[in-house]
Length: 224
Ligand SMILES: Nc1ncnc2c1ncn2[C@@H]1O[C@H](COP(=O)(O)OP(=O)(O)OP(=O)(O)O)[C@@H](O)[C@H]1O
Image 1: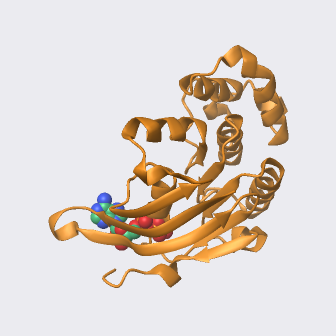
Image 2: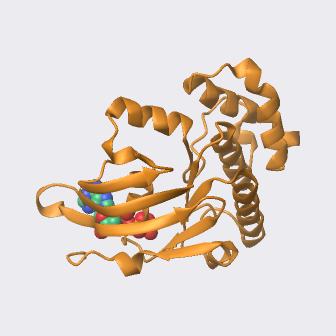
Image 3: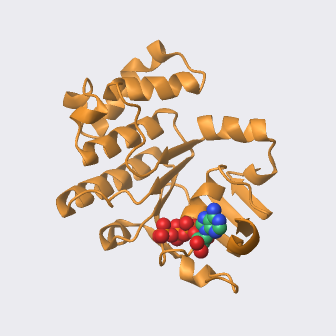
């Protein structure tokens, strides 16, 4: 079980802003391990997450998630893979205003074509797992930044994803919360056995990671 990126090249923008964000990048992310993706600003971390998450199709290369090449799937199959095989925890949690924590999870499950009623028990378990059983009835404006990210993590885990992609989880929280959140992501990764890739600038995350992938080893020749 793994995510294997094989010879990935991505060009972004047009005309003068055209940039080779990734060139010939190859690397492997192991299941059941938290991998920290590090590197300076502009080194391609977000681009790699977008390619791995089937949000952006590479110009060239293969994105092998447990053997399926996500880059070679049709748009429809890629959308399905995003809903059913991949969990995203992107900055600020991207929660829907007006929905309680529990409803955030159930709404996502509904979009993925599942019956919310059958998942209510699992949603509650996951909220308890991320330490938010007592906040399941709170809306985003009634939660702290760290709590919102934990809701987003529980939501991402509800579909039992093979791949969990996390962008800068500790950017908006204090040191103690950063430790808590990182520990939580590590434990859930080990418990759920998913491939977890966390883009980060934070040494707290890097220290807690099982593996570190440094984008500087993959800097395109014409970057900058
Ligand atoms: N839409 C775009 N058009 C052109 N170039 C882009 C576009 N988006 C990103 N880039 C460039 O692609 C490169 C990789 O960007 P990316 O956002 O993946 O880096 P990053 O490592 O995630 O940076 P940060 O740590 O600042 O979030 C950078 O040089 C960036 O300027």
